[in-house]
Length: 71
Image (cartoon, rainbow, N blue to C red; front, side, top):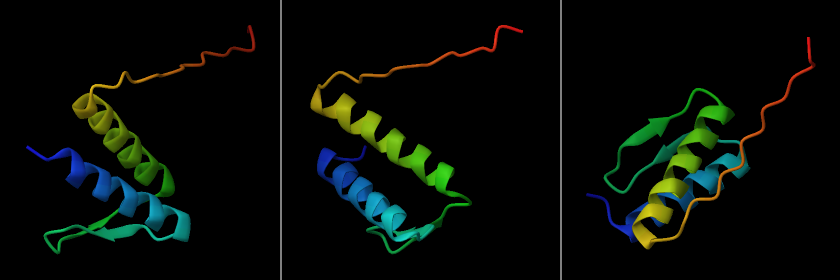
């Protein structure tokens, strides 16, 4: 099981790489993870956020929009 500190470190490195426009991140074991797109990297960051919230006991607030043109 991954510790809270490890998850936070991984999330921070993912976020920093995303802000630089880089789609690859090297983890603490020296392995490189390459993402196919920015949206895939955003999904990984969101997954980290959910795990961090679950481990720290904070509730996860999610807003889901369902829109339609009424056709």
